[in-house]
Image 1 (cartoon, rainbow, N blue to C red):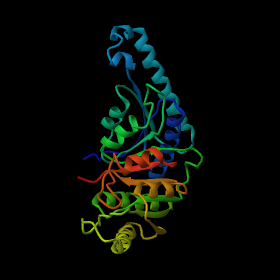
Image 2 (image 1 turned 30 degrees about the vertical axis):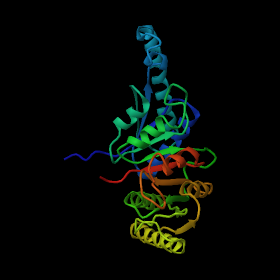
Image 3 (image 1 turned 60 degrees about the vertical axis):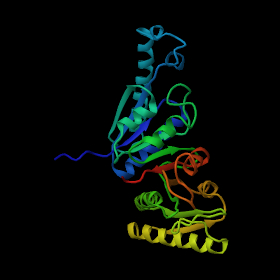
Length: 295
C-alpha cells in the first residue's frame, strides 16, 4: 500500500506577500524534508463574476493571456524556490478558480498550507479576510499565514502558542511543541484572561480570587503535555490579565511563529476563527499557524 507523501502547499500570485510566503514555505519544507507544491490561481475578473461584464468579452485570446500570465508567475515561483539551494523537490500548478477554495481543495489533512497575509487585488486576494481566512477556516490540516519579512525564514528560535485547556488548544500546543523540537526553538505558552473568567475546568464563572489559580493550573497542565511530546524543548509560560488576543499579539513581537487553535472555549477564550484566531491573524507581526482539531 502506497503512503501519500505529505507536502507544503503554498499559494503564489507574484505579490511581495506571496513571495515571502514562498520563502517561508520553502524553509519549512526543508526542515520537514517534504516537497513543496506551488499553486497559482486564475480567476475571472470581478466584473465578469458579478455579471457587470459579459463573460464573452473575456473569451479567447484575452482569457488565454490571463492564464499565460499566471503560468509565468507560477514558473518563476517554482524557479525561485529551487534557487534557494535547499535541495527541495518543487512542483507547480496553475488552476482556474478562486484561490482560497483551490488551495483547500488541493490539500489533505497531513499537508501544511502556507499563504501570505496580503496579495494582489483580484488575484489571490486583496485583503486578509478572503484567501487567508477562507483557507484558515476550511483547510483540512494546519495553515500558516505569513506576516512580516524582517526575520530570517531559515531560523525559528521562539514559538508562541495560546493555551486554554480545551481540546482545540491542546492540538495547537502539541503541534507547536513538535515544531519547536524540529527547529530547536524555545516554546512560550501564553494564557490571557479577563473578568468575568470562565474556568477551563469548571466551565462556570469563578470569583476573581480563584481566577489566577485556575489559570496557573491550566498553564501547568499544558506545560506537562508539551514536555511529554518534546522533553528537550526549553519551555516557559506567560500569564496575563488581558484579552487573549492582545496577550498573543504582544508576545508575538519577540517570536518567530505564533500558533493558535481554530477553536477553543472560555478563558483563553474561544480560540476560533471570528474571535481570537481571526484577531491574531489580522494583527500579528509574525507568521501565524492555525491548527485544526483532529475529528
